[in-house]
Length: 253
Image (cartoon, rainbow, N blue to C red; front, side):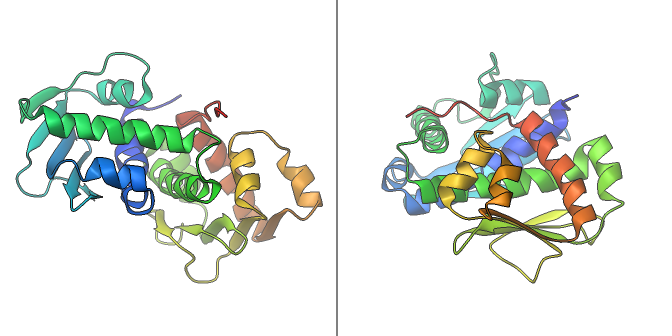
């Protein structure tokens, strides 16, 4: 079962934040971001998740919660409506509480979001950037789901330790389960209790798209599992749950 409220938190707290890296490292994304200056607020229900997407100096910053006045305020009465918009499953029109005449800001965000989808789901995009964005989404989504999905939260309360997922000699992320509230960290932190490392960006992307057998690659030493095996078994359950919330898309050439 997919909980709409959890999925909304994943979109706002795991997917949108990669716009920061994208606008900083991809020239096309930076060009889009530079076409407007302002703050767009996304809000779900009266007490649901919120975040601000801030455009300034050709860069994007995503801030959790609601901080100060916004230029555009998009209110979604239900989590399902926001999820429909972000997933493309159906109509998910928000109620524009503010800034509905500022079409340029909405158009810039729409173009940038579309470009992000293209980068994530097109083989023509740079592998290193695709892998970094995908790892960042994965770590944040894993932490959000293990905190908020009822079944996964019960499981998370029984494990302790840190997990690092990354590319050999490349980008890495960590998820910390030691404090009772799992949290993600971009970049390699302290020595982890469990390491899941991929030989190349391309291999990681193939695994994330379910195109290769992970165990076969492990036998070839292209995938390294090292550390707490019990934690590894639990993390595997979490990763399967992430793929249910964010199913892999067919990647275009």
